[in-house]
Amino acid sequence: MNHITMNKEFKLVFATHNKGKYDEVKKMMPGNINLLSLNDLNFKDDIKETGKTLKQNAKIKSDFIFKNFRINCFADDTGLEIDSLNGMPGIYSARFAGKTCNSQDNIEKVWKLLTGYKNTNAKFKSVFSLNINGKTFFFEGKIDGKIIFNKRGDNGFGYDSIFIPNGYTKTFAELNLIEKNEISHRSEAIKRLIIFLDEQKFCKLK
Image (cartoon, rainbow, N blue to C red; front, side, top):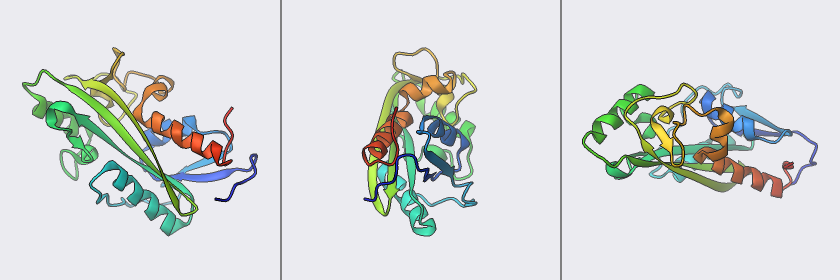
């Protein structure tokens, strides 16, 4: 793997259109990394997620961007896994209520399926696929919590407003970005990705 000079800007694409995700990750990146999104590449299409696992879907997206743009990149796939629903919605989290659904539709479907269940334990899981010079590396993160039946908070996206992480009384959407980045599934995976970039001399941690 080719190393770069530490003070040189390292361009890296996060293969997402989701501004909420991008902002979370951007906040954590070392200063010499120029983090771009798919919008910066002027790529507006959706990459079809045909995998059967979070890992497969993340790799499909990072491979697609590297193959078509020849730029180092990473992609994630994140799922909400609810115990009483046998791990659903899982890989279908973003489109749980249908192909044209929005976050509110997904939340309402979760509430409907959980009706009558006392156990609302759930976990968020993220898998990141990093494609550097055509080689792929994976990083995972997860956090346990529970689903509530009323939306609370405006800071998050997706299911954040109905997910309370264990040990907290606030939902993800009630935590600010700094608080969320200390504990979230996505931040855990990104921290591991950044440590890898540091070890490979692409960036330097403070």
